[in-house]
Length: 218
Length: 243
Image (cartoon, rainbow over all chains, first blue to last red; front, side, top):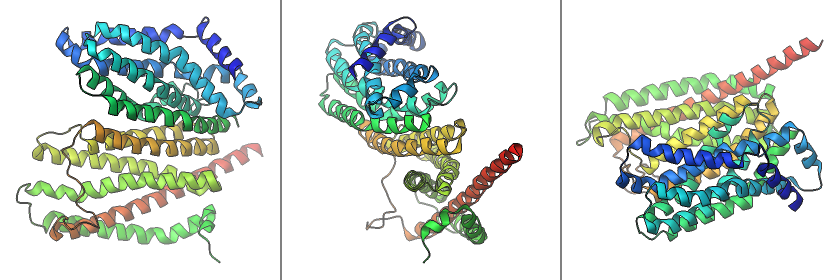
């Protein structure tokens, strides 16, 4: 399992892995928002938590098709499926690797990009906490979506259509916690709901992803 | 002894549904025309909402069927995953577009009613929002069916999506409840409550609901037959090409 994790991390970090792409995309989205809504600092302050959450979510979505597509193309997914490692563990590791190479950098970048969006000082801790708790759910749900579309040619658009509705609860609670924190309100409740979703998803969805991978490899 | 699973045989399904279909269709048509004519022309106008209250005869049954169609797809998917009856997977596939259209009807009639009464076409109310999300789930489900070429693989994938999607749709329902307070009134048709819609409106509404249920059953039976026949035709063509 650890060997697989290290392999996935190496593949992501080395050339063509797209580690920086998600971050660059996140940066560009956040930079484009002020152009779209106008240079009003008061407005930016209000929408900052939502924009940062949405940007992180989209950047996460962008990198999902790399989870299985490359392994499926060169046949290593078939090898991994016949390995003694259960497929459930494989999908969990894949999600973990995706989070380490996409989610975690996004969380760190969000704290920097928050300066661009004039996030109030009290909003940093809740934003960071909600993203740390929420992005693993995005990776796990995204792994399920990637597993569903692994057999479909040019499944990127289809995967977005499948994954985005599944992201709704995570986004609602995550952005709500960040928003309440930025406005100085208590934010423990949405944060706990978010944590609940994340842990439930981590516990259950790898089974669904594995079932789906099995179908697609048949 | 006759078992429910006999209808999992496609041929048996087609003969039985052929026998039932004209009756269901005719009943759907009559109850819909009775209910709608009764509701539109022979009920009083609401003293505050005026004639706009009559949209209830389309809105409520459509919304009801939008949810129940998804439930039917969930049951169909479960049966397919557990017992591998092709008819059940095809019935789930057949129900999806019908359910999606019902969702659109509910959303559009709601907007038409909301414009004069709430003063807006759309608000981010929990009920409205969760219906919009449900519509997105229908879109994804149908897109996945049409994207995967192999029939059994598509049935497996969409069934798992339907199961997972149901959980997330339910989760979204309660998440949006947390997220925003609504304008939409609560349930006014519950069986266990004292206060319901007045009988003048209630009775034609019940007829309309029955009509929508029957219409849904008829459409799903018809579409399932079409799916079975289409699959049979593909198999025959494939056999011809081989021989």
